[in-house]
Image (cartoon, rainbow, N blue to C red; front, side):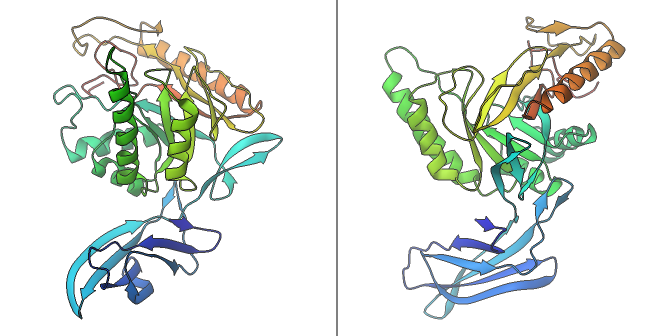
Length: 347
């Protein structure tokens, strides 16, 4: 856990052997910037990072960490990793609640990304494929991806950390099948905790979304508090992206198609978690199943005109307190033919 105000990072080295000790070496490139030796395990330790370089889009600085474990004077294990010095928080700017990155307001503009592929469906085809999607988002001048009701392999988040893209991470919304609701709720809660444990330390993840559009939504206040207790102050928390808001957490989120909207809240940062959804069908690159869409254009030129018109509306909402906007969506996803590019990533 990084603390940019104090210039420190805190960590716990966990070991089955309570008598073990650890050495911690922090490096900035080849330069060693901090060292702790012979520290006890299974308790939090704080490492000072002098003149810390902060992680942010455009300058995603990462520190390397090398941890050596010793038992009775013999090295028994070694782990390498990395971390970023960054802070996400809420504040007030010009009378509106605002998301702050490293204590400064940063407008977050990005895409909805369901992570679907034409061959592997939910499985990325390659490391290059994962990185390609991230680079396309950045090439469009965007700084954020909302990873929609899907958890990616760890390497995807590593690429986001390295490339400097902000991530809003949805918890995959539960299904509540009739007669098995109690099991489904328990399973969702247990999986939510495991997902957070696995990924919460990625500096790119700045927001967790508990529920999406009322899908399987239950015990919203309690479930949101479970997530807050796990991720705060590392990340912000949205109780529900669209629809059934419970007035808890850091974010008030609205969905609107095709034109963006600006929710109103006096304490929480206001965002438009989904808008857009422009459909442009490209012959030879169309999934052969059914259709689902919000608005359709006939030519790439029409797509550009409408996309920019929607972006102008976002600018208007900014002056009323809108902190972020998420365009639907990165690529066509089978029946949802409303991507910025086709499902096969060709056009």
